[in-house]
Image 1 (cartoon, rainbow, N blue to C red):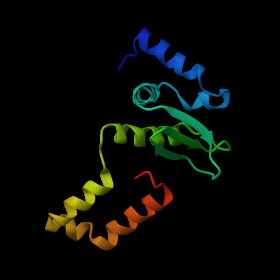
Image 2: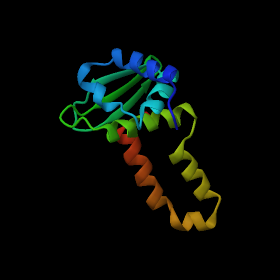
Image 3: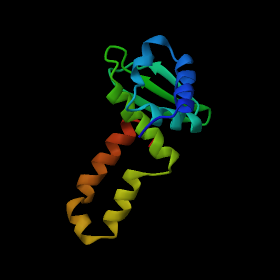
Image 4: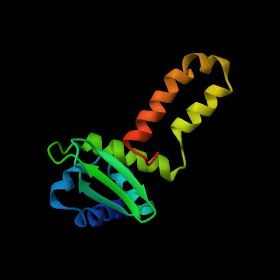
Amino acid sequence: MKTCLKDKFATLSLLKKMKEEYKTLVYKRNEDLWREVNAHFTITIKESEERAYLSSFTPEGTTLFVDNSNLDPAAFTHELLHLYLKQKQTWILRDLSEMTLNDNELLHLFSQPVVLPIVWNTTRRCPCF
C-alpha cells in the first residue's frame, strides 16, 4: 500500500512529539498503524521498569512502556496492535472464553484448564484486559 504525502507529513508531525530515542520504533511497516491509533488515543511513551513492552489504559490516556535496553520496532508494533484491537472493541480472551462454552469441539480444544491460565496470566500481567 502506497502512503500518500499527507500521511507522511502526519507521521512526521507525530514523530516530532516523540523523544528522540523512541523515533526508531516507528518505521515504514508500522507507521500507518501508529497514525491510526494516535488518532484515537492520547498516547504517552515511557521507559518500562521491567525489561518488557507493556500497554496501560486509563480514562486519562494510554501509556506504552518500552524496554529502553531493547528498542525493538516489532515489540512496539505488538503493543500498537493491542491499542488497535481495543479501538475496534475486539476482546480476544473474552470472545474465546464465550465461544468455548457454546461449542463442544472448541470446548475440547480450549477447555477451562487451558483457557483460564491464559486469561489469568494476561490480566495479572497487564490489568488493562
